[in-house]
Image (tube, rainbow, N blue to C red; front, side, top):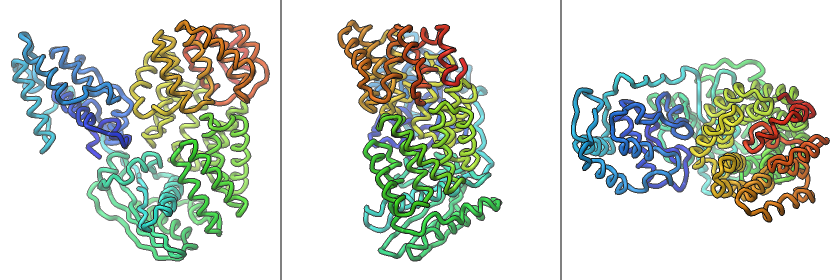
Length: 612
């Protein structure tokens, strides 16, 4: 996978299209380290990976004002998050270096010793030689006095459950090995005092053939659980082991050869063994949750695992299949709470992304969440889904209570922290939202919606210029996330870069045709480009109500963006069904600045139960 300090963003994200430009990024990191005396990102391996994915390095020229501008620019271009924005080949890099090296006045101070001044060509040759040596045998850079100390790894107990290997020789059973992984993540995530790496980030490392230490470094944990599962008719064979990250020592291991009906006992035994090996005290409530038997019907459990497997893929088609599996499971065992909880989470995501009509999706999510909680009040994901739904009914205090309960039940459940970030954004509690976003990404650096929302938070705090930079840096990860593309497009439109804006906004519309706010932003952009007929056509369609359940909000926000504030307030002040994306747009959309400045805006917020 690579070394955390030198890892390109697309490498950290396990992008299947990764190519040689990841090596050019690593070259940029080494060059930065040589010139500045310290790498661009430091801290734990986990912190460094997050830095590569979302943070902007301090400009090299501010650290070394004595080096040629062309060299400083080259290094920063090599460190661009998007591979398309880097030099496209080593030949391009050499051409730039060659041009700098032949400059008559090219000279700079090398980091060690500071007093030496050498012609640039000599220094450039030294850098290239160092890069070659580093690539093959590794080397230690003597850091300057400015170098920041690398933070020590967390002393807390932390673990990553790696995807169990399917040894059945049958891809049809892949959902079972993945499901076993999911169940252990959920079970261990409920243990107080234990940090558990989130599913998104863990599954990004699947089939990478990495050693335990490399994985632990990447995920910021002190130990990993490895295992395999073989399902053969009614027989079940599972192996599992806990490996310490520091030295690769196997702390605990066991093999299980059981009947399929014993799968729940095996999961409980593994979880208890892991907790015991890590010397974590289990409360009576935690023991009870680990021992709970949710269903005795293996066929129901199998449908549930198939649903979870599709849910994890997050596409529209897979989410539809996930719902189908959950809905087939619950009639067979109406008391199987986890199926209701997962159904609720799926409907929340589908409504939020515009995959189903918002009111339908959120209503179904609320019903499923209530069923799950009534059957088992300890399911954190059910409380998280309910908290999200309550936010759309303007029950913000109740929403916060549910989300905090979800986090209390499962402190490692990154989705609950992300939902809480969204709620805090709607409530205009920006500093708290930023902190929750930080916690979310610390638990799950590859939770892409959280990566995108980080950029949006800059707009909430009044710094849309920084929001644009952050969203652009995240594009390699968020290129299919509709609200990331929407906000980036809205910022570009506000700043007069209409062709770029239209490209992002149309991308958002392709990703989620029903995503709220996009139509208004496209109408605004068309109007500014002189394409008035197309702009008017969109507004006419919205006025006819062709956007179905979102029509009033969509129409009102579009009128606000277009500057017809009287009509916008007249539409939006009437009772209507607000949803989370619309409420966040209300707070953060840069095209709504004049709307928010209007004296009627606080009154509108009051009707929703929000403060200015």
